[in-house]
Length: 494
Image 1 (spheres, rainbow, N blue to C red):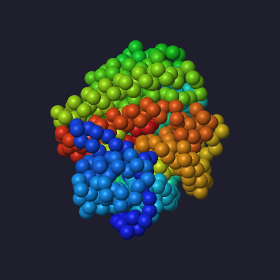
Image 2: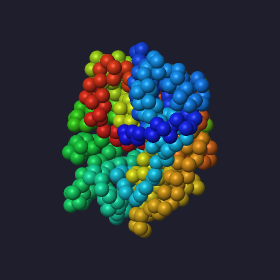
Image 3: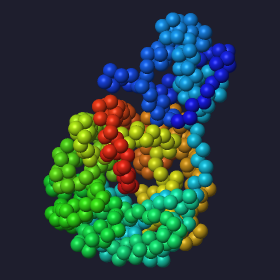
Image 4: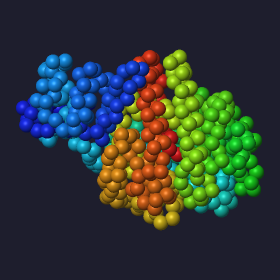
């Protein structure tokens, strides 16, 4: 982090005010910490820093001479000058001068480069999950699959747009992507060969419902070191409540032996489970324990808070219950971490990773910032959730010159401006950035609208994640570099 020195003589001529929207203070283990929000930077506060912050907070608007007069005898003039200069440079104190920190402005720059492309290789699905956001996905017989020409153009498009990046990722998605396994078998070697000619590495990930995990498929995934996520909602009685075949029959007994085979035979990369929490499905602890017992390395939960059908949207009481269970799992994560063990609870490990990396964003995800989606026709969307959404036009087509990057830039600028205005007082704004565009479109009819319906719960959850991160840093700091820094976050929002 770059700290810009502020001229103290200039500071003396201006009134100083605390920029409370730019800080969040916590005490963990008897130690005081300051989170500088725009940077997602954490500092342990010493006595001088704490005294200055408390003084400015109490008085509202002060001059430098007042602080020196009242605090110099206890803390020393030079120490006070250093602290004031650093707080000003971080944007914590407003001196009326240029502080070396531009409030929340991050230039979007050239967004024509890509690192990740999601391929909807199959619009077909052999299941009929009640809550599927892609309710328009067709059945096994009538749905559409991506063709080889579209797939080839998509791979070429990604590689041509890789810019200075040395590694790109292809995500196979659907529908159920393994219903077009023959195409995947053609795409992977083609992408590898074309990437190698450009001096690039290409990574592959897939999200599957598990029904197509045959021996041949598992061997292929192993051979090409796929990142694999399986959509699975827990034990049989919970899973079969929503995840069923077209005829209403539960899918658990069909996929269980296939998942076991995957977990037993493929150990080169951690296999993750993705759980969708809907109305009436809130037993987080029970679901997590079952999936970890099966052998999944990571389990991530996606609560449904909006959608076309309110019958699957979680109630406010259910959301509170879910976050309470999240808190319990987070405490288990902490206990394990302090014993130098890793518990694969993705929802908390991602927060801790973000604090460790200093993740600071003004937009909620990578959609349009390096990630795009291509549907079976070659049409391009911001992400997989927008593909097929009524009223959402594609951004272009891979066979027709690719996306209109001016439109993408316009969208991102509008999102950034709207959400910064609405969220500018929130201390988690640089980690949340207003939430999912598609969720906002579903709930508010506006993709730029911040997802305000769970703000309080999310702030509480981030507070928990921050506390756990700081406790780990106090008591077992090597855990972060050992378990979290090497961790590669795949396309976890799928």
